[in-house]
Image (cartoon, rainbow, N blue to C red; front, side, top):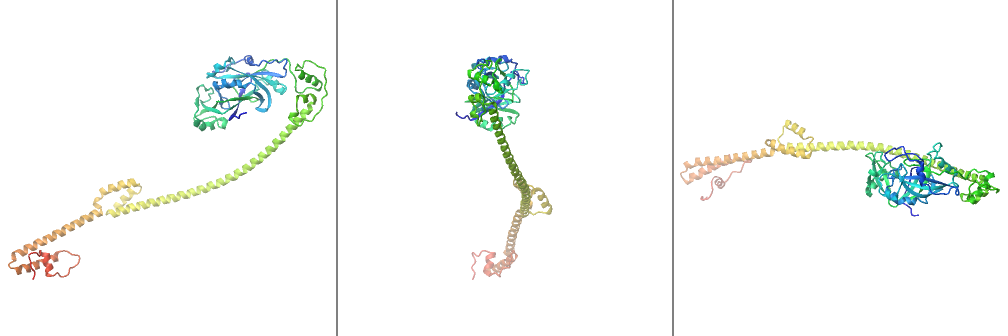
Length: 510
């Protein structure tokens, strides 16, 4: 058989004649007689070992307690495939006790029959209703308990439930508000990325079935869906109608038969007739050691005593008990070892955590010191730059220090530009340039003044060439003395004196 990607047990199907405690608009009281319409046609007089049953297998378009649901389209496709699938106990496939024979559809709450064509487009909840048989010879007690579950006066009333099993490969997500269970107004999520994102919220994958916005999230089975059977359980859920059985007047006792009636029961099996027919055939029963379950056959049961079977069962129970005890001890040892390792790892983790905290504290302190140092260096550089550029008083420095101590680079740049305007009168470079210019202008003015004065004093007194020369030499000496120099010059020659006082062009020196 091809292995399906997912298998799910939908343990939310009561096979008992009740109405769910959740009384919404879709629920109504339905009698057990209506469910009996779906019983398979079995001649129970000739087949006294068969117990016909009918029950609602699931509610379509309504989520179950496991967080799963199928819609009408899927239900219409798979319902007929329930036929011939096994009925077991507690989903133990080694304990098959019956078989499903038929599948139908009925209205949710009333069990009125509906057709497969109607259900394809139905958005409201409805039932998949199954009919089948329980093999009494496999488990007589369970067969009796199922029959008692129909009797409101019995302690077993409404005590039996069933859960259906499906195999499937694909699913979508449905999101509902609050406690809503009917999917007709659900938000459907079919995008693969979104399904992957939210699938861990599903109960099937260990989630809570909730989203962060207090909405509930469920899995809607779709695609290739294969019904795998029905399991009977003692843990009922909600939203189904119950189990129906016919009234049987003749029963075949399988368990606890006496030695005196053993021969009669064996003959009844062989001839497929009721135990009511008494046959005077007596067989001698023998004790046989049974070593494996395969030894138990119909033929063997006719020949061995009941103690042979009970001894085998007791031994098997002891084996299982011993195995369980050994496995339990092994698990407890493993748990103890794991706990010790966890405690050791936890202690190491706490120590590392403490060390990390100490390192972080030191790192924080170092970072704070480095930041303070860097901040102080930036402050010193800025103040030095102001001192270098401007002539500052102590009051100026105090104001500047207060203003720039917390400024970032952008704010400081703007502040520096503002100060260039406000403190331009204190700019050292500008003041020096101004002073140099003033001195230069004063020197030029002094030279020009002396030259003019010398010319005015010499001109009226010139009478001869010799006098002019002598006067020029005298004036030249006076002018050269008045020109400021950083170092005294050597005594100029007569030619150099002429050159300073007048242009030598037009004069001939002999």
